[in-house]
Length: 217
Length: 175
Image 1 (tube, one colour):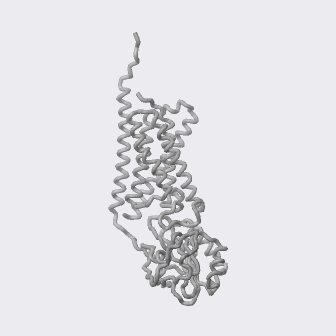
Image 2 (tube, rainbow over the protein chains, first blue to last red):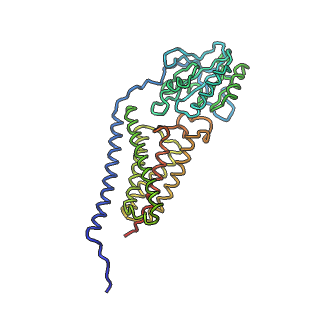
Image 3 (cartoon, rainbow over the protein chains, first blue to last red):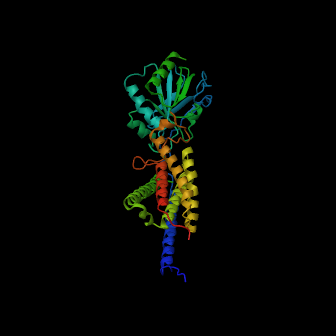
């Protein structure tokens, strides 16, 4: 006669209890997360305007820049921009006879975070000639992303170039055809586009942009 | 939605990540010390624990995208593709008590972990994905930064590690 092992009394029950506890734990954990999400969703908005400006743009929009190909907007007149930095100091981009290098920066972009100190050091070393103006635009601002707000970041970096705070929909960036950050636009004194490019360029790139601005294309 | 609430949620998820990683390291050490017998430590509970990790990771990522409105980047989607099925597969395997489930789940966890590792590398070395940021949704940009280094792909990677470790502890055969 074959004997079969009988399970120990209560063993199956203990297993069921163990399983039940894990299910309960999972449900409780899920509930906690959902409750947290609900509390987040119902919190009021605060400080919504920090990091943004209210720039106005006049003129024709430049087509979107396609990285890696020839700029189809070469020679087109860039729109004029009237804006301000975070302190309300007016900053403009207009055909005033001075060639300009405009740099668009996003506070959360690691390439911008790497480029800004390099560019500032280059400026501090006296490499930016008096006959070329460097203007920056803080754009693509997102308070949910790290390194917000952009003014704190730029102040920490000792950024000296004038800054135009873009608005929430990136009006200035959109009108200049920005397709990636950092984004450079070189303008002659009459705001004609001499060249655009995106990405980190380093000191050699800065020198090339200055030469382009001074040459007038 | 206030920044403080989001920070609270970020902290909550980051702490969970650290706890889970520490637990996983503890399990690995236990396995190294005890040898094959260590697999009996968690028994059938291992699969349920793995399911809970997958569930929390799935729901947590959905909260980031659907409630906090972070748009998942390309690499985030690849990690989601690996994680979301785990929340279903592991549950079915746990209910049916099938040890074979780890052979379906482990590849998903390891593929997800590989993508997470690459995504973390891209965040630490952004030039791996080019020289500029897509203004809408670059994978090189951090969505959050907890404890000075932890972003969402790190959390996802921790989830995949914990699931993989727990699966190696699951030996329960179908009864």
